[in-house]
Structures are given as structure tokens and as C-alpha cells.
Length: 128
Image (cartoon, rainbow, N blue to C red; front, side, top):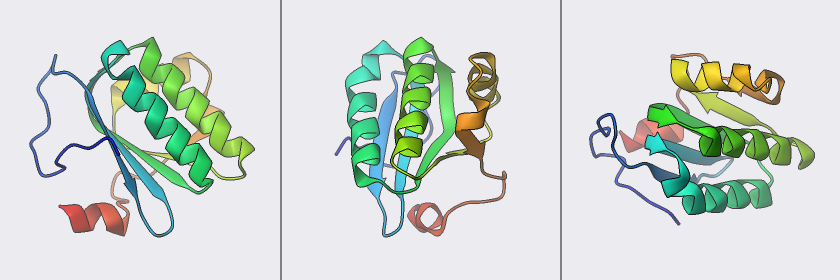
């Protein structure tokens, strides 16, 4: 499991990215932190493979993303497509205007669904 203490404060702009993968009873939660770029590509690959192999709903929390490049966007698109092929979906927890704009720019808005701002899964709330 790739992990970061969820209690830690969110990184500042330019901070190296991090990926947290949490397996819950009925879903997988993936949390992205900081700069999501080539420096975290191995962690993204693990998170995507774990989520797709689990074959259940996955929530991708992008609230703490400070920057996302093509590696991060590709991750979101590949994970969403893989989950769809497995018969489930990728939900994005935001808001993250940066990520939303990137997803829209690459034409992948139909692959994901944004959770409403106030919608937090109970597993995520319990960790706060």
C-alpha cells in the first residue's frame, strides 16, 4: 500500500506528490496530494491496478492536488476506463478546478462523475 498520513496538512504548491490507497468495505479510496507528475508515476500505477483489480466503485480525492501534468491526467483517464470495463465507475471528490479543467480538456468528462462538494463518504469522514 502506498501511504501518507491523512492527518498531515496538505502540501504546499510545488510539493512532491503522494498517493494514498485505502480499501474500504464497499469501495476503494485513492487520495492524491501535491504535484501529480512523473515523480509519482509508480504509485499511480499501483493505485490504478489495485482499484481496477478490486472491481468496485473507486473514489479519487483530488482536493489536495496542487498541480497535475499529463501523467496524472492519463492516470485518471486510464483508471476510469478500466473501472468502466470492470463494470463499475470512478467518482471524483473535489473540488479541484485544475483537475476538472484538465479532464474536460482531454474530452474525458463522460468517463467520470464528480461527487457534490458536500458529499464525503463515511470512510473519509471517519479518518478526519
